[in-house]
Each structure stands twice: as structure tokens, then as C-alpha cells.
Figure 1 (cartoon, rainbow, N blue to C red):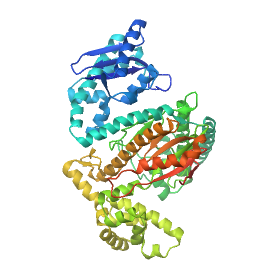
Figure 2 (figure 1 turned 180 degrees about the vertical axis):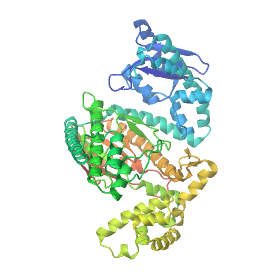
Figure 3 (figure 1 turned 60 degrees about the horizontal axis):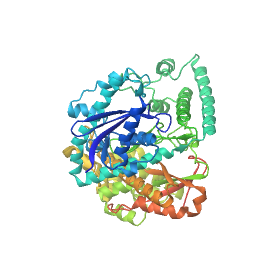
Figure 4 (figure 1 turned 30 degrees about the horizontal axis):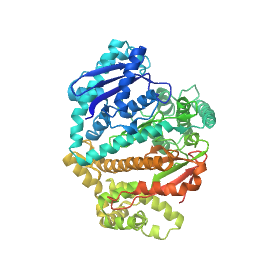
Length: 586
């Protein structure tokens, strides 16, 4: 019978695909028996502890339990110089916590153990005094480090003993948990593969932004008549509200001081247009972009590859996130609301000899809204492959839409599309009507017709808010329970749609990764998930087979028979960089 033990690694830093490495690990069984195993102090202990490490991961006699298994397994694989994650059974108490308590303010090991078991948190303070940069714990005196490791091993096994029985008792929750554990392995291989940065182009972008930033600064100082540091809030406040006597349209929540953030600048621009506002906006945009691009250069390895840290449960809805760097929100040009965009997507390129395919779920948000509201007409339209947003445009804009040119109809359809989402999420007729530029009386008449035509979609937001208020949570079709903040029941629809989409993408990643491993021996692989999209790296020498592979990937990504409407994906190909993608038709 396999023995369950907690397993916690200690490393010299967090850059496990760089210079950081594991120097110690600790284990604890359900009886409270702990072991501290150093790998850096003497040759005899290193040999002994390495033997124990191999016994844990190579003999199938143990089931390790970790808190953030992706990190611990990556550190262990680096030390053992081999892949192990696919060959073992393991558990992750961080995932367990996210699954059972999605709304908890912290899923950190020490916070959870303190709250659930009363274990004090002061041990971290005692060791951090010896670590200047906060990451290399190998510098901490051995006695203090031993005590620290012992507690973390005990915390982990206690959390597992508390959480895991609750997961096992619900069949659907247990299935979600298994998918999450599989996603740990899938994500490890993405991070290991990494993403190619175009170093020279990144440097050129930085130089261009520096020049533009300096030009904006010169114009700000010319308009203000004195030296100004736009990075200092006090300088901007003086400039806007004293020098140019602009009205205060927004205040900060914490101090109630005049706000100078992006939203405040946009509001001022609408009501008090002035050249200084444009130059401040430029300066801030170019400064931020330059900082982001410099961070990319600081994260590349010797092959110009970035190995991001993908958090498989980065939000309370179960959605993934990414840091070092954040690749979920890489700026792109051509966005209407982004006045001075930084073309950061130009910094990412396919690896030499490869192309990238960006495979994005098509209209998944609306498809899920239609599934959950079960609006008969919209279900019928989607099942026939029709345009689900056209009927809304015909109702909301009436003859204006019917008599418009194709170009104008496209614009009105886009506006109606936004209205469809707004109404489903609970926005009022007058509010949406104002956004659409409709007279109040006209808006009320047309929205009355809209509500009668699509009653289930129109009242979905209110129905889900009421459900969340009554029971404190909503459940996805997969069975994930998402607790909704008590004073924010209106976010229930967002939680449900975002949470469902997240689970679809997670399952898709696991399916696609498994298929690519079997069909191409890993030559083709996933690079990154971005919201409702996955990016695939594909070798040019295999492009003759690409349609077959992409058809298989598409089939795996849309095979969710539990939904009332079909899912679909769109594919783009990037041969030069992520900014210049082209539609790819199978």
C-alpha cells in the first residue's frame, strides 16, 4: 500500500529554469513523523537524502502531498535531471484550497494552517531576517531552517487530511480535482518549453519608447513652464488642479485625494480638453511600456527564452494567471480605448524553425450565456451556425439597422453585441440605451420588445444574483462551487461564465497536450494559455501535416457534449511575431 507523505522543497530562489536550485526538502507522514533532508551540507548526507528522494519518486511506494506541486515537482525534476511528474500520483493542498474555498482571501500555506489548525506564522519572520532578497533560504542557519521546514511539512499534511476527504465525497468535485492535477503536469511542460523573445526587437522598442517618452516630457515642461516629474503624483496634481485649474472629477478610495489615474485623465479629456492631458497620457503609457519591455529582457535565459510562471488557479473563478512576466495581458495595437498602445506583442516571436498557432474559442462568452439562460431562439440560431447578435441589432436599432449599408450594419451589430452582454449581466434599459445613443422613450420601447423576445437572457443576471444571494454560491455545469461575495451578488453571472470558460480551457489544454505528446512525441507543444486561447508551437518541417493536427486539436477543444450549443474555435498563424497574425482556415 502506498504511503501518503507531505513533501516540501527549499530552493535558492524562484527561477527554477534559471540558476535557482533545490538545496533541501522535508517530509511528514499522517502520524506527525518528519524528516529534514539537506542536499548541500555534506557529501554523506547528500547521498543518503538523494537516495530517499529517489525512493519517494521512483519506487511508487509514496504519494507525495505538496502545497504548489508545480513548483516542488519542477525543483525536484531539476535536481534529479529527469521528468517525474507524469509517472507519479500526487496531491496539491493549494489546489484543494482553491477548489473548496474559492473566495478565501489567502491560499498561502501558513495562512491556511493558522486559520484551520492554529499553527503560528512567526517562523517565517525568524528565517527572513537572514535572507536579504527574500528567496535564497540556503543562507539561513541550519537549526532555524530545520524548524521552519518541519512546520511546513506538518502544515501540508494537516491541510491534506482536512481538505481531501471533502473533495472525495463529491464525485464532480473529485473529477475537477483530477483535471487540476493533470493540468499541473501540462503546465510544467509549457513553462519548460518557454516562449521566444526577439531580443533585438525588444531593445529597439525600448529605444523608440524612450525617445517618445522624452519628447512627451519636453512638451509637458514647455506647457507647464517648469521642471516636472510626471512619475510623481504630487507634480501631476499641481499641474492639473493648480496650474491649469482643472476640476477634480475623481478621488482615490484610500485618501480621497484627487485621482490622476488613467480613468481620471480620460474623464478630464472629455470635459476639459487640453494638450497637457495628451502629453501626460503619452508619458505614462510610454513609461509603463518601457518598464514592461525591460522586464522581459531581465527574464530571458541564454537562448532568449522566457519561462513564465503560470498559476493554474489565479483567480477566484478558477481562471489561470501568469507572472514573471504577465503574458495574459500583453498590449496590442489597434484597440480603440488604448490611445497610445505599446506594441509589446512584437517582442514575442516563434522559435527559429517554428510557427505559432493561436487557437481561440469563438464567442465562448455568448455561447455560455445562451446555454445557461436556455433562450430557445438563441439556442436555435447557434445550433444552425447563425449570427446570434443580429436579432438584437434588428430589435435595438429597428429600421436604422434594416436600411443601413453593410458597413453601417457591422458597426450597429457591434454595438448590439455589447448590449447583449450588458443586458445579460443585469444592466438597465436606460443605461444601455444611453450607451447606444438612443432617446430614453425609444430605448424603453425597444427594450420592452427585446425583453419579450429574449426574456431568459434578459433576466439571467437577476436570476443568478438572486440564486447567489440565497445560497451564497453558484455552480458551473462541471460542478465547481464558486462562492460569490455576500455584498456583490451582481457578479454571479460573471463568476459563472468566467468559471465555466476556465474549466473548458483547462480540459482543452490537458486533452491537446496528451494528444500532441502521443502524435508528435512532444515536437509540437502548447506554449501558453491566454484567457480563452491557447498558443501552439509547430515546426515548419511538419507543416505538410498541419491541417490534420489542427483538426484533431479543434475536435478535442470543442468536444463538450453537455452544452446546449456547440463550441467553436478560430485559428490564427504567427510566422514573424505575435502582433502580425493572419487568419488560418482549415
